Length: 355
Image (cartoon, rainbow, N blue to C red; front, side, top):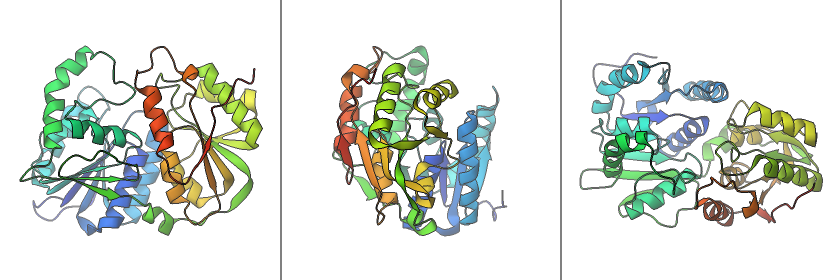
């Protein structure tokens, strides 16, 4: 970490917990040109795949001239106290806070400390759409796949912090709030500035890619989050691969090794574990002429990252019969909304059983 001059602290402090969040902070910085005043704070998770992608993204951020502060924020019982204690000073001195996940308890806690008058939320995928809607309606901040479930003991204990964070994310006379997003946002809260993320940095930094004659598939963590039945997901992937001639499967960083092994054995697809967010992988190439996906963030971001190329992004609907019994009552509607609001994509009907 490079030394800071005096006690002025960073002009802009950005908190990220995933590779996609870090990518979107770089996109925001490219669009806003904050210069050397940006410090990226990585609140490192424990998942090895996520950590690996975050380290690669941190390297890119340093190459762009930004300071990166890596925090082992979950490295043991004392880690949160050490992390928050070390960030107290910078948080209180910074003018602007950028965050990738307003649903994160870590981020919500940090929001109660900062005095920053400018708050920016960059995309953490499709969850951004839900965040903006909840903020506009004054609802408590709950991830879409958990909405409808009863709050647990930890939720109840943390409720005052979550409420305080929601109030802090509400614009006021002395506070500006911006959402920097590539997602379609229909219901904008009063006073919140919505800025479009066009992935200009990604296109300027990488590519154009070499395009293959085959199709590629994009994996999702819908099974791991308890939304879609594992067997149904396997059937859908098998059907799509056969119909469209897919040869590679780009795994989501949260997909389990067991599920991926089963996919490889039963479908014959080459499983690829990307070392960077898919937007960068696709832009660097090689990438299939058709990219197949289920409802997810990439149906919004890939057409932007691949603008000007001949790559076609196709999205397959989620059949309601694929959902688990424990899936949130809002799951089907939310996933349909993700698909229906996507621009510059080809919509495919839900895959029927191939067994």
